[in-house]
Image 1 (tube, helix red, strand yellow):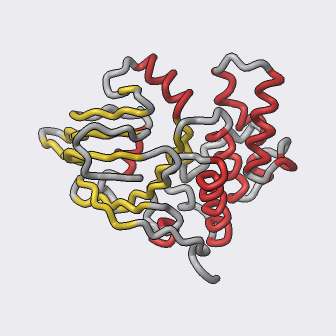
Image 2 (cartoon, helix red, strand yellow; image 1 turned 90 degrees about the vertical axis):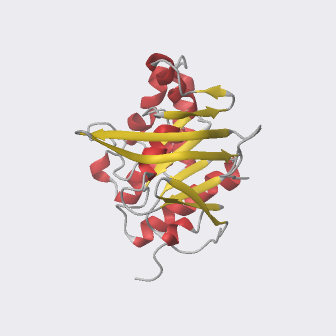
Length: 247
């Protein structure tokens, strides 16, 4: 269950309290996020929407430990990450967060297998264990037959599937998806969102996604809008519909 108004005790997987983020531009202070409270339970699928510059990506970066808030706290599975050292935060991200970006961020000179294996190279897994994890992740995203293909040999939708496999290969606590369909055609976007929905429904993954597309957002269980730095709950419209509709 997702809540944006809980100020008290919570057993939610992700707990955000009084989150603020302010940037300085010259002599001017720009307040992007203002006093955000948010609870997200394990297995939730949340979509964040809002106009450009509303702070959606900033919020995702804070939740993933890529940025630090000006004020407030973020706790994930009992770990309060707000005041972690950079070294501990790096270790925490490797264990708990899977990132999916709009532009895939695959390394062109590496095969699909090698791209997916990258996060595991920072772990103590043996070569055999890494292979088992990579093969399982590529199988989940439907690319077991593309193991040795390079990104240039894949379609955009397949590249994003490789990126999702890389995000889930270490079995992270939650996934952060920043416009995961933003660079895809309608058919590929629908396939990617069907895959993300399957990760939630069949594999109990927790997903927090930023999107500008209201049709993509209907895949989520809960849609939250960022308005002037404040979260507003829009509802739980989960519908299994095609992204983008017809041609």
